[in-house]
Each structure stands twice: as C-alpha cells, then as structure tokens.
Amino acid sequence: MKRVLQIALGIVTSVGGFLEIGSIATAAQAGAGFGYRLVWSIVIGTACIAFLVEMSGRFAACSGRTIPDALRERFGGPAFLLIFAVMLCVSVLVLGAEMGGVAAALQLATGIALRWWVVPIAVMAWLILWRGTFGMIENGVSLLGLVTVVFVVAAIHGGPDYGALGQGLVPRLPDHRPAHYWFVAVSVLGASISPYLYYFYSSGAIEDKWDVSYLGVNRWVAGIGMGFGGFLSVAVLVCAAIVLGPSGADVQGYRDLSRLTTVILGRPGFWLFVAALGVACLGATLEIALSLAYLLAQGLGWVWGEDLEPRRSARFSLTYTLIIAIGAVIVLAGADPLKLTNISMALTAASLPVGVWPFLMLMNDRAYLGEHTNGPLGNAVVLIISLLAMVLGVISIPLQVAGS
Amino acid sequence: MMGRPEHLVADVLDEQLVDATHANAGRVDGVIAVVRTGHAPRIVAVEVGAVTLAARVSRRLAAWIARADRRLTGRQGPVRIPWDALRYRDRYLQFDTDVDATPINALEQWLRDHIIERGRK
Amino acid sequence: MSEEREIHLERLLGKRVHDNQGRVIGRIEEFRLAVVNGETIIAEFHLGPDALWERLGGAALHLPFFRALPLRPRRKQIAWRDMDLSDLSYLCLTRGADADHR
Image (cartoon, rainbow over the protein chains, first blue to last red):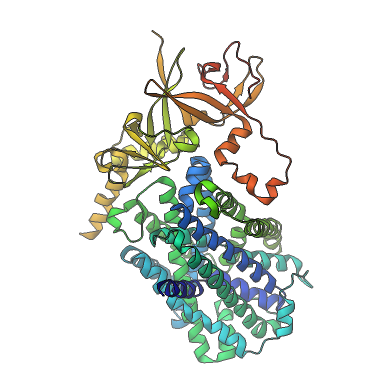
C-alpha cells in the first residue's frame, strides 16, 4: 500500500512539475506557427526524458550514488569541469527564463512591470531553498503545479481537430518557414530533454534514500509521470493551434500566452493561466538552482543536502544562492524572457551530448548497476534522440539568429 | 593503507574522501609520488583542493585560485593527506580524523563564520 | 645517495611517451599499483587508447552504436624501470627498453 501511495505521489509530482516556461512557450509557438504539425517533437522529447528520468532513478537506487558523483569518478576532474561549465552556461540562461516567467505571471496579475518582480522572486526562491526541506520542495510546489491541468481542460473544451492532431504525431517536413519550423522543433526537444531535470531526480532519489526495492516505483513514476507531463505540453500546443493558429500569429509575449486559456475558458482561464505560469516557473527555478548546486557539490566532494541546515553545508547553500542571483541579474539586464526562453531551450538541445552521453555510458557500466544496466532499447532511444537534437540545434540556431 | 586499490586513476584519483565520521571531505584531486633513480615511484600522499584540481586544467587558473584561497582562508597551499593515513574502501577513501581538524574544509568554515552566521545575527 | 623528488602523478595523465628513436608510442592513461615491502608503488604505466578504455570500463563498447565500429583496442604496459621520469616535459623509455609491449 505504501508503495502504491509513493507511486501515486511520484506521478502526481512529476505531472505537476513537468511544465515550465520552456515547455509552455515552445509548445505554444509550435501550435501558433504550425498548428498540429509539431506534436511529434513533443512526443519524442517526452519519450527521451522519460527514459532518462527512469535511468537516473535506477542509477541512484542501484549504485547509491548520484550522477555527478559518478561522472567525476569515472571521467575525471577536467572532464567533469567541462560538463559543469557547459551545464552552468546553458542552465543559468534557462533559470533566467524561468524567473522571468514567474515575474511575467505577477505582471499579468497586477499590471506592475516584470522587472520590479525579479528581486522579490529571487528572494522568495532563495528563502524556500534556505529554509525548506527537499520533501517540501519536491512535493509541495509540484502539487501546486497541478493547476497546469487547466491547459488540458482548455484544449478539450476548445474542440481540437483530432484528425490533424493524430497526423501531427508523424514527423513531417514543414510546408512553410522551414528554418523556423526546425528551430521550434529543436526548442521543443530542448524544453523536454533538460539535463537539469534528471540530474535533480538522481539527487532526489539519494535524498529520499532509494534502494533497489524502488526500481518498480521508479519505472511507474518516470513512465506515467513524464507521459502525463508530455500530455500537458500537447495540450498547450492544441490551445495555441486553436487560439493563435488561425491568424498565423507568432507568440510575441506573455499576453499572447495568456490568451491560450482566456479565449477558451474566459476570465477564470486567465487567472488559472497566471497561477499555472507562476507556480510552474517557480518550481523550475528551484529545481535548476538546486540541480546546479548538487552538480558542483557532488563533483567536488562537498557536504551537500537540501535537508541539511545551510550552516552545515555552507558551500552548497551559497552555491544555489549565487546561482539564483545570477539568474536574477540576467533578467534585470533586460533580456527579453521569451526570447531568452527560445534560445536557452535550443542551446539545451544543441548541448545534449555533453549532458547525456557520459551519463549513458555510466548506465551501461556493471560496476555501478550490476545486472540493472541499460537494455538496447533505452540506449538506442536516448542516443538517437539526443543526436537528432544536437544536429538540429547546430543547424537551426544560426538560421534562426540570422533570420531574426 | 588498508585495502588495495589496483589502479590509480580508476580506484584512487577523483574518488570521494570521507573522514572518520563518514562526512564528505572533498575528493582526491591529486596524487603525490616520490621518484628516486633505480627505484619504483612510491606514492606518499594525496592532495585535496580546488587548486590541485585547477592545475590539471590550467596553471594560471590554479594560481588565481591559490591567491584567492590564501586571502580568504589563510591556507598556504593544497591540503595533503599521507597515503598511510588512508583506508581504501570500495568507491571512497577514508582517513581517521575529523575533517574539521584539517584545513580541508577551511573555505566551508570561513563561509559559515563570515556569511551564514553573520546573516543570522 | 640518489636524489628524491616529488611528482604529481595526475599531471602525467595524457602526456606522450616516446621510444628511444623519439617516436610517440602512446599517452599515459593509467598507472597499475603494487604493494612492495609495505609501500605502494607504481608498477606499470599504461599507455594509449586501450588504457583509456580500461578507465572507462569498456562502457562505451556496450552502446549499440560503438559496438558496430571496427575498434581494436591497443594496449601498452610499460614497467616502471622502463620509464624515464627525469624530464617530465619529455617522457621516454629508458635506454634499452623495448617499445613493443603487450
């Protein structure tokens, strides 16, 4: 019974924690610009992250180690520093986008300009990490994130073209704006396959003291939780296809995003969108900051743990403090949060080999996993999709930058 | 050292170090050997610290970190743990003292005393 | 009495090793340890990409993609007495040492 409840909680928190500004914005742009044609990119991105999250939990449960711990041990200090440097550069951009998302939600709610909210949001995120426990962050914020189900309600209520939606599951060449099509596709992949997500998940499994008996729980949580999360992203795309698709208008700002639910559900849809955006981006902010702090602390062998008092893990605690400050500075420096979202998602995809391939090699190492190493399906799915994302990213980012 | 690592890179370098209480105490960032003509190189110590790690990437970076570390913590260089004081366990190395009795966590202590505790007052 | 000096073993990783004719025979990727008279010594230096595979645990060869590649691991193990460490900026074999190792 206890395991059933753990599975249920894990699925619910995975769903609640899945959407963030990256998946919302990229799915909305996909729907607005190309209708249902890019549903396939959400599906393969979700499949890839589901495999990666399951691997991450399995790795922690079987080896008793986190991914950064094993990366340092297996590949050495200089290689670890390279991985950390790439992850840091890309993830702080994503962090800036998420903090911008929270600020945008508050701007929509109050009319007060986004930049005035950045510092209070940074302080609030920092306070939650400083004072909170891992369980509170993992469960509390993610449960609140269930408000993102509003997109599913709106998508069904809006009366989508189910036939076109079904056709969108099959990858197709674009019928217009090819450079933008592939850029949005790679951004969707980057939003789905964020390394910080499964790095965070492995640290969480250790914080929760998982062992081999949790492999079943892990499989259910990763598969169903990520699957439902991907379903939420598809719902965002559907809403955008319904509301913005007919006019062919691009998503220009957060007000356009808020129309996805407001046009279909009226005023309650607006407030639910604001809540969904705010909570989803706050959750992602906390996860990214913690994930980078875990990565550095574990790689360098420091004392770490969200459940520890900051005075007992000073370097770890001050690392996430500094990271939140950097994220705030990026937004305050005037970066347009939506443009920042797009480029950071595409950069995430282009840099996936650095974040994913060393991890994939660990997943095939019997010294860590014993008999629980990857099968050929998991290896193939992750390898092929991450390679695809990288190739698309390397090609499309320059085209998009040149085009805009 | 008790136990037996068979390979330096696979079993010793970059491994987690823990103290007598099993608290994390950094990682093996470097390994020191003594070389003498006609004799096999003999391992005498491991080094812990960002300076040693940085030196594997860039000497200039290591020098900059060393200056900053000296200014903040007063440490005069990387921390060395004698090889004979280490016990090799599967996947980590342990030494027999409390990490707070060594300079390994000097930065951790400095941050705690000068930033975290000050903020609490 | 011969002079003793300290060296950082981690800084030897990746360094090229030359034979007596000045040809590069590999890069240091691993050190095999041994305990002699209670002291831990470097018994062998492992060179070349095969030693790198050793360190990686052959994990990459388990990936479906890499298994298809025609990789034939090369292995060179140099005994401690065959490695001249007098000049760390130019590592070479000692006089008379044979470069053809298993």
